[in-house]
Image (cartoon, rainbow, N blue to C red; front, top):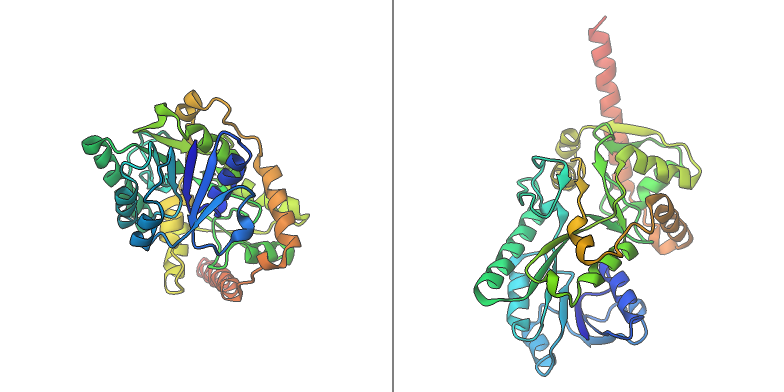
Amino acid sequence: MRALFIGGTGTISAAIVRRLAKDENWEVWLINRGTRTDAVPKGVRVIKADIHDEALVAEKIKDMTFDVVSDFIAFTPDAVERDYRLFKGRTSQYMFISSASAYMKPAASYIITEGTTLANPHWEYSRNKIACEEFLMEKLRTEAFPVTIVRPSHTYDERHVPLGVHGRNGSFQVIKRILDGKPVIIQGDGTSLWTVTWNEDFAVGYTGLMGNRHAIGEAFNITSDETLTWNQIYRTIADALGKELKPYHVSADFLSACGERFGYDFEGSLTGDKSVSVVFDNRKLKNIVPCMGTHVPFNKGVRIALDYVLSHPECQVEDPEFDAWCDNVIEVLEEAKEKMAMKAI
């Protein structure tokens, strides 16, 4: 069978490509710009092109057909419209990576199934994913375009430590604050429920849907079965570092207001996603991919990630602006506490 991945070197897609590269039943192709050739496994074939250059891609695939096409870098409706034009009649299955953040926040129930309403007024990213889904499902209904929709939640790999509150440069500055014994901001009171998924576990579920007739026209959650509070997530990180966690809890609303002028979209990433308790129901996926499971729990996965980050200088990108912002937020709130204490005297 022949699979084509648009992207193929990111957190999610790289694990899937590595898994399929070991499977003799699959011929794996990538479309990407060729900037990360070191991340492409042996035997995987690369079509070097920018997917945004539709005419060039159409020329390069004009004599090709695929059993599965997967797009990992489609974030807006124009991207899936382009894919539809390129791959209509060229693939037996088009797999779209949506997002669990597309589910209504908060939903009527914290148990999230594929039937949970899609609506997110807090985050444009999520609304764009919903619009992509709507376009593809319309093409399924009217033209039998063979779409499968996948909704991951918070998937991570060895280069990324999952966090709730961080700056533009990723997680390292928060790791450094823990190592330096500084307080670390956690949204809310830290008791909301969350799910993080190791990328190789995700790949098991995803590849099980590839070429699977039961997946056509359907949407699937693919997440870990492990549910943690944010306090547990941060404490597990601190434990793996051998350091004491000094949590500083701040409401998501306050973080959104304080972060906006600095360019931090905490309304989207927190109010529209990570500050809302969710528990994902993966039974629909497991009905057709019974081998799906949590093989790398967070206490194991985070140690793999931290070992990698701390041994690879290129992953240790400091963020002094975010560090100062955290200090300022904490200072302002501590001053407010002192003022309120004085008023009570």
